[in-house]
Image (cartoon, rainbow, N blue to C red; front, side, top):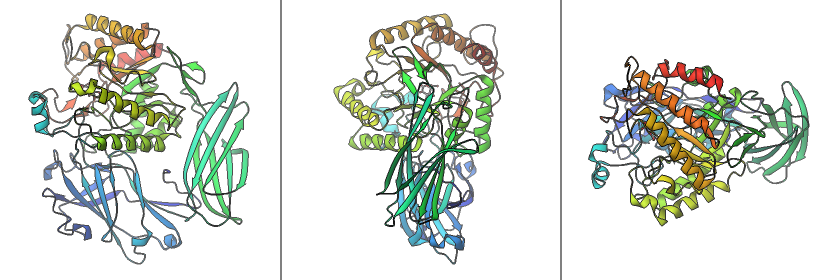
Length: 593
Ligand code: GCB
């Protein structure tokens, strides 16, 4: 599914703005025919989570259904076009009606979905779009949901959070990314797949373009642009709905953090000599490769300096904000990072567009966070595979995406099932499925070493990603010992698997303004010292490929006595102001190549 683009043949209308909502705590909206329209409780800003935005209506910790409605008109010019309605994401389960007719649904909170709406559009009057969103998670969803009874059955009452979650970030609800209408010709480009290769100083772009079913005989022109010039062009008669081709680029410019060079592929579709569709796609030519001890970008070793992040901000929750994305990338530059992981779910497409432009190396994560293997069913497995398929399909053309993470910390509750034959089969199937979808990038799955070096996912990962909290959850206050434990553990893992290792999480909560002359948890000094200790260990080991601090910025979690409203492991606070650690990290990363 292509990202919406306005050009000579496509027109995009953004339905972001004020929508109306009605809370459906009893889940009776459909019986009451709210799909035909309802009297509203309030106005909501879209995109944006409902939680902080409308907390005064009791929505802060709300889990359940909320109905959204929006009226819109379409220009006459849309009349002869195919009209698509696309949601960047809605969390978690969305059911959609247009003018009373059910047009479809989507399950999964972090990926786009779209519907063709021509049959139900009204051309000469206002249209009524209704969306019912339910943010309830279950054992079968990705990510999984949890109940208070689950905590009890595991005798983990003290782990219980409100609202109950199995992961350490807030389960916001709402329409989180823009809702857009696109009008385009019935015969159009549906998807593009890019692969790039490098041989010496020459680059190669291989592409495949998928078209909607078109009966007429059509011509496809594909042009390769560098800056303002077309440097190569191919023209073909379209046979069937798939068109493949390639461009060889002698003495090419390659994409990297230091030189995020983007070519542009321009697809044009002609019927006789009339242009009926076009699409422009930025393309970075680059190659990722793993050796036993290194990650190579365009044949050169690269060391990942960066963070685990979250999509989270005051009032917006997970709602997309262009200024916030721009700010975060400025801070990443300022601090000297070159990389981050989209923990613990795929981020907005706009984030990856920015990463392509600014030269960031991104590990994109599938939203299978804290999978509990006792609760896993065939439905969970199918949903997991579906999420992988959709993430890879959405993000594979971005040069910034250098690896895929298929989840985070399965078996967090220490359930025996996470170390069983069934779990092994589960991971074998998940990794095999993922690897046939993309052979150009490595796969990983961050774990915490609950099973020491016996974690079942290690053998399937191309590189290991280790989340480690020595000096915080374990042996708190003992920074030197934390360093020793980390060193021993990483060496052991490398000796067992001979795969490069990313330390994908480490850090400490720090509340800005808390200070001490001695090692004291929650002070700014402790956070700084612990991060510096981890740096010294990680950088001294020849098989590590990077250090990702947890976290870039403080973020909201469900309520628990361990968290003072937020997880405070950010080196920036939630407003993006630096803590002391940010300055220390900046000084340090200036010296690390
Ligand atoms: C982890 C998780 C992350 C948590 C973090 C913490 O291992 O991957 O989601 O937020 O620890 O701060 O506890």
